[in-house]
Image 1: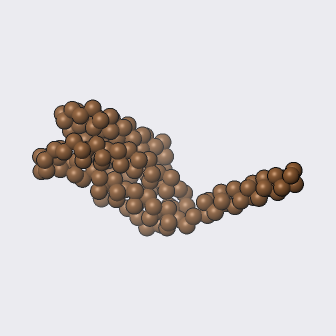
Image 2: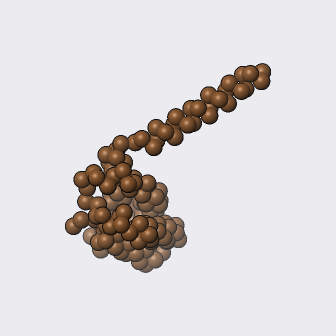
Image 3: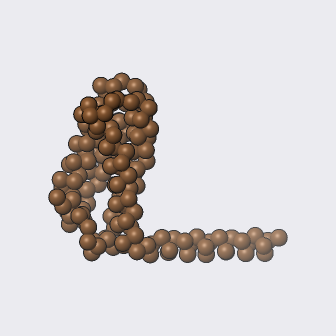
Length: 151
């Protein structure tokens, strides 16, 4: 019994080590595609909210709540794809991402704060509060793009 347990522990430990090594060896191009996919999906779910903010489409509380929930998850996803290994991959990312990591992290945090507030406002159901929160998310997106993305 002990030998089987010991064998299982060794296999699990080695397997975990190989899994960690495999994750560390993800191709830079794959990391870039993943972060770009997360950003694309953010745009997909944020776009209708901007349309509601501008009055181009009717306000729909159910869509706001759904999209704010999706944005809550999506706004956490792209950041681990900005590794040093991706510096050489041709993208619209500016070198400031790596030259000013604290400022880049602050921009990420501002987006997260704005999205969390949007999600809370959406659950609260007050259209005015939701629209103000949509504007704050847009400002956070724009500030990051202004400083860290080629135009």
